[in-house]
Amino acid sequence: MEIISPFHLFTKIYSVMQIVWENHFRKTLLECLLNSCSSLLIRVVVNSILTFT
Image 1: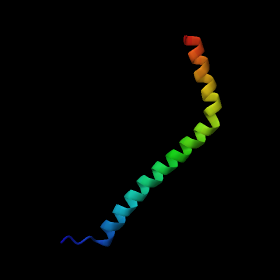
Image 2: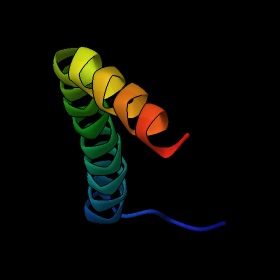
Image 3: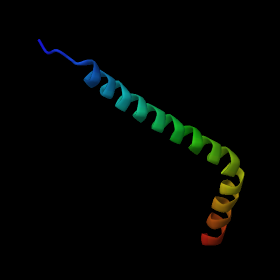
Image 4: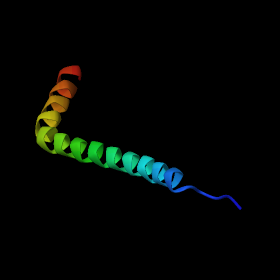
């Protein structure tokens, strides 16, 4: 049976938390950007489609 030291456990938990935090932060940041830029983005996409066709 493997004995997991508290430090090892802590680093493991910390790394998982860090990944979750980064992913969550990126996701919320992306959502904020998408929400604020969605109308502008749609306009740009529509304009580009109209100019290319």
